[in-house]
Length: 427
Ligand code: ADP
Image (spheres, protein in one colour):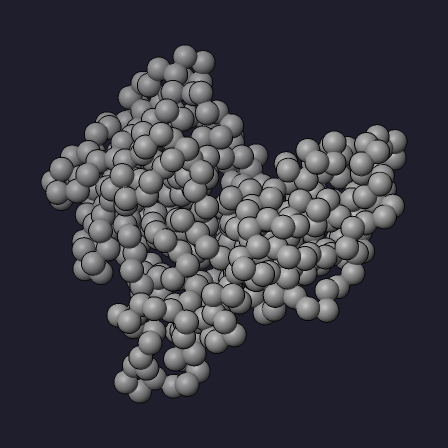
């Protein structure tokens, strides 16, 4: 990467860039990661873990001075820390320790933080499995991945165990569903995930809406390339939010996915099986719309789903779809956390007053009829569409707006229903 002109850098940055700490691979290591950032710089970290703490750490990079300084500072910050704490060293910590970087190269600190975190997670994973395949070290005797199913081939059994090993590290799995597209399912999924991160949770957001993966646009991640470590795809990381979308695999946002059934199923399976999700408090899944084969495969692959949020609009025609979605969940034994009525009235961007435009209340009536909770209404707010188009989560960018308050109430109800503790939100 070219050095930006007229950089103003602190003496600490210069010192760390000129004589980086622990520069070079470790001969003996327990965790390793290699990531190429969006700027093309590659960083590699090695971590030696002893008794749960980082005994030694080391890195290399082919990047510029700020990358060298960020990697070097990350090794200093990680040294001697418990592995879990070292994994949480973030971009902000590295920037603060360096006394800042010019804004145009702050991403070097993010690359260092993400690579260090991935190396620590790799060390923790290896320590847990003690060299054995991860599933073999699990103590859950009721886990179905312990036994081969009747007629299951070696490869299918190995793949199922690999998937189960991933899913075991995800504490809660929440599905966001809708009867049809365009009702705001992705909007709800993105803002739910962002709100959970704000409340201090480690969250994954998986966009398997195979016909219209809109999460990359909604989070401004369209041009960010995916990285691989040891055959596993790294989800894109934004602080405590890890994101993976089918959209990342399309060459251009305009590409349509025209896959036949088995290909779709295989893609969804790989999204769960070959992705380094790591330890997550919650995985929010933006499901394909409807009640057909695609959402069915998602539910089957996820195994135990902790709950589904059904998103609808107020119109009467949407009612049939909501009923179908609720029945679908019941058939599969997925608890319905409740119904969200989106685009319910129009919120004035100036005063926040909500004016009914269509008949509203349909979502609440169906929820009552079908004996599930009504989680709340979200009005049409032009800034929701604007934030989505600009790649920002509305609930973060307009945190003080009346609509964000309504969204937070919905998140609180979802969290309560799914028993997700929200320490950062005071619950
Ligand atoms: P789905 O996932 O159900 O297909 P999306 O979440 O992608 O729907 O929403 C479709 C479009 O509607 C997006 O452009 C989104 O920004 C916009 N949108 C969703 N909910 C609202 C709302 N409450 N107010 C304004 N625009 C909204």
